Image (tube, rainbow, N blue to C red; front, top):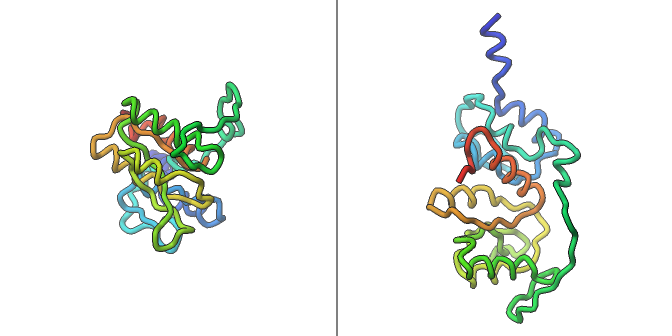
Length: 190
């Protein structure tokens, strides 16, 4: 009986596949792949490339598992509209995020930012970058309305020693960062 209960507590990749990937709920944010060395993206979906140890990290890091209504919206204090006054900023919706990141980098509030740029070969596809210069941030201005795999860049930035990182991404990626930050596995405890 004790062994049976212990086995029931284990969460394997198959649960993530069954509940999130197969039904098409996966947003392809890459949180599961970034948090587990035996997962990779294959044929546009997370897949096993090694033996699953049923540690549960991939399932618990997924922004689409254990979701409540309040976690979808978050805590909103105020809502604003804004437009950048910087002439070099040519952003999609006023360039506010680009301007804030430029300010944060210049003032030393961040040492890098995880963002996406358009692929040079396929401009409709995003490529995740770790921006460490104003030029990188300006190159990333504008929106790309498609899934972007930014979580691997975030974790590689941390491994390279970045400690104050700006992060830009769609809501599913932001949810993944929030889950990693509050994870008992210590994935983003800086």
